[in-house]
Length: 192
Length: 168
Image (cartoon, rainbow over all chains, first blue to last red; front, side, top):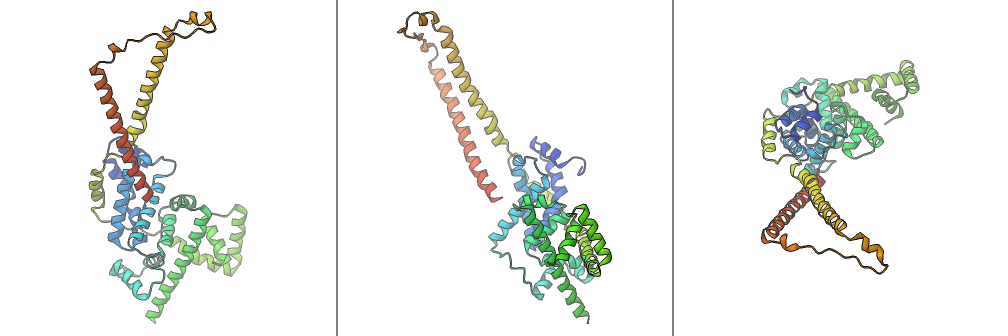
């Protein structure tokens, strides 16, 4: 069912009155929408709330989706703006998580599960490093790698020029690399 | 970010032209500085590309569908207002005006117009008493009120939706 119809076909069904077709759209995009929301909130409960809110908003304004871009591009732009509004409401400064101390790092690690932290695989470190990035840096990386969105599509979602997104992505990866190196250095220091 | 890293990221993202790509590939092969930077960034790139997505709770889909069930069908009222009602009102006026003009043109005495320069157009008298009965006026007012309410409803919904869309 999930792969049988394209997003646009499912949207046509929903607009034609078949509300249950929307469940397939949710099933198809929920993991990415949730992951993207998690990049902003760093908290599973808030991310789930944002992700649910995004799907409800998308349903409400489904008629406004003109199919000029991919549905995912439109949906992710809703995630971005909803998450930003959520962060503003919570009065979280965008640079709040930029200068995480070791204790912050441990908090994030414990939130992602002790087993995962103990496992210490490369992926875990990459995930931890992403969690320490600024929300918009983490979002750009997530959209590019996990959302498989082009720079142009990310630009549309974030309301930015393609070149600006390119620079932003480069900088985000640079910061990610630095965070990753710092995490690994801490690990080596602990072992010594 | 240093220039080498920038170049390598462009290479990995596929942002380079064919000539630039070949040039950088040869640099990576020959220059140890480029080679080590490439190995490091390529590794990070591969890790990022294979990251797993997080899973929301098991009840996520059901929770969203429960909320969706409380929502009106998307765009139903707006499309009704935008197309049917607007076109209906337009058609009503076009038909009324067209019918009136047609009636006038078919009943005008065209021969008398050309006879004298100072001649006047004689508008035929219409017997309104046959049309303007109580039932007609009530029906007319009822339709007007209904159209007015529909438009007002559309206006209110549009205002609310615009407000919500601005938030998105």
